[in-house]
Image 1 (cartoon, rainbow, N blue to C red):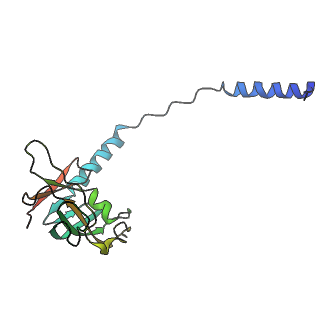
Image 2 (image 1 turned 30 degrees about the vertical axis):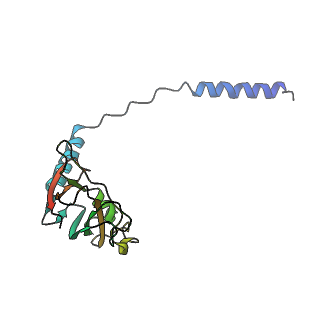
Image 3 (image 1 turned 60 degrees about the vertical axis):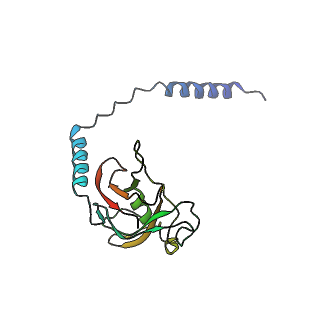
Length: 187
């Protein structure tokens, strides 16, 4: 297929226009953020930490409250630990949403608690999460909680031994800043 002189001229002008469009003036530099905004963010984080507490099995954060309602050691093969290879410590709890943010009971727990069994003289022994210890929560464990609403759930951790107490450590920033801790003896 041959191009006529007129089509060749239009094509050439198009190529030149494309090349020239790449030669536009440089964009203006974005303005740097002020340090005031950073200071306000830091103050907000400090306020959130000071508004948090963990005492008497109740974790209180600005966004939600977690209340531990029951704790139980479950042997291998027993209801709640039918499929496990180690005994577990199970916690039953309720989460109350005190904000407009979306939260579910599992995320609230996993995002704030770490279980530790201090039976290693050289390292911190964080326990692994086990299977859900209570089948009644299969459908509700990831349910969004409305502002002011409360949803119950349970969680279990694999024990490394059946005598060393378990410390439950609460934090509101994925373990970076401890809010408090509670010790649970194994019965």
